[in-house]
Length: 323
Image (cartoon, rainbow, N blue to C red; front, top):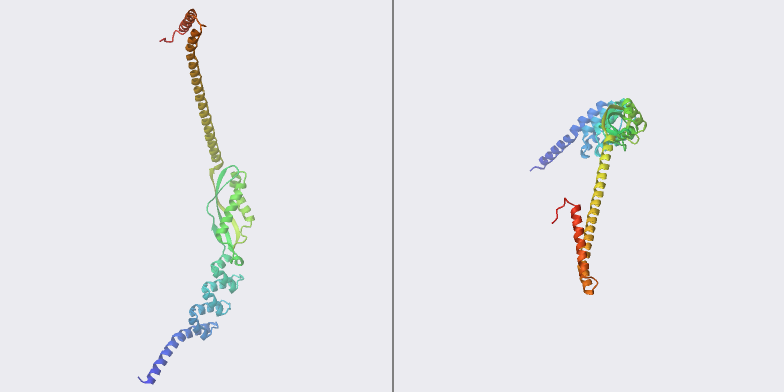
């Protein structure tokens, strides 16, 4: 193959590659030039090698220049390479400038990299946002439960967006303040008559300290009467006392029954001793006969006395059946 032909092929390929990288760059460069945004042609070309989309950077630069803002393309590239949203940051800076809010590029980029929507934050600074709390239940001192629903109007604080707490903290603090205020009321009627006492006391606590928002107002949307918690607690306590008293009474009954059984056992034991003692009488009489201390006539007299005693017992108890 002819050497000149090979050289022509190489030159053609080089021209095509050059047109691929420079062709689109020229179009963006001309667009930036006529828009008043100064972006170097070679800078646009080398953006592709830096894995940066030139169209995004040039468009954002033109947008900022047209809005009267001026910052370098290197700042935009650095923010993109750091994982930020370049378009959103530029839009937030333009919105802040139009609303006379002090916000520079570095702070806007920091807010965006922190994971917050910087454009939404700027919009909330101009147009406050209303956050509705969940239904919060609390009990007044008289034992009546109240359920309150509130709406919190907040405005974004640009200075505290980085490192400041979010909406969840605001809701938690407001809920805690509502529970504390209702719990300190003497009666539930006081809260129902003056629901604004809740918002005033909660607002005076400075709940937005350390958060990314500024609380403008706390409005109580609804207050409903719930259960009589005090009465339920008293009922439960009475029921518990009743069960305790029943348990103690059952314990005393069991002890009394045990004592009764013990006394019955002792009676049977004493009867056994009596029977045993009576069983010794014939032996004693036999021994007396042997020793000559008891005669036949004495024995018959004793038997007659026993018969008379048995007869008297029978006459005195006519209803009892005799064997």
